Image 1 (cartoon, rainbow, N blue to C red):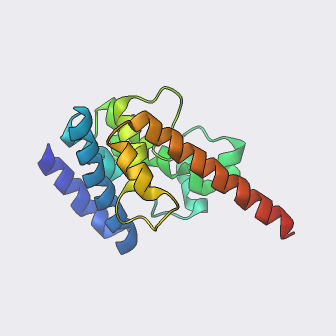
Image 2 (image 1 turned 30 degrees about the horizontal axis):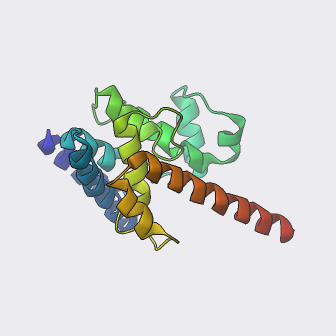
Length: 179
């Protein structure tokens, strides 16, 4: 299966920007390390890590059009913010374009951005790896979250969500004050 991961990674290198590709490889290896820590399949984690941003190469309008073309359900919020659809389209592509049959991998790609209640172990690994991979721009408390990910992934996810919601709240306040 690692040969399949390498094949998909090679295809994506031609489609993604260099910066996005470096991030993708970082997520792949971070996910593999977390998989080893939590006793999951390194191959599954590697494949999900490589594929997690496979649809990130499209504009918001392209994401919306492609999702509608493939009859993927889109919420009003997603239609107003097309970038939110890259995970949904990525999960579709994982299955249809890259031949992934493992539903755990597909679901991990689908929920890597938003997470969801009751995440399965591979979903939790990809969600976390996307946030903590070493190439990410420095974020407040990132080293603490990175350490926690290898001690208690549920606590790491809580910290990620807490920080993300705090950031979004501050951003919304700043955006509203600027109007």
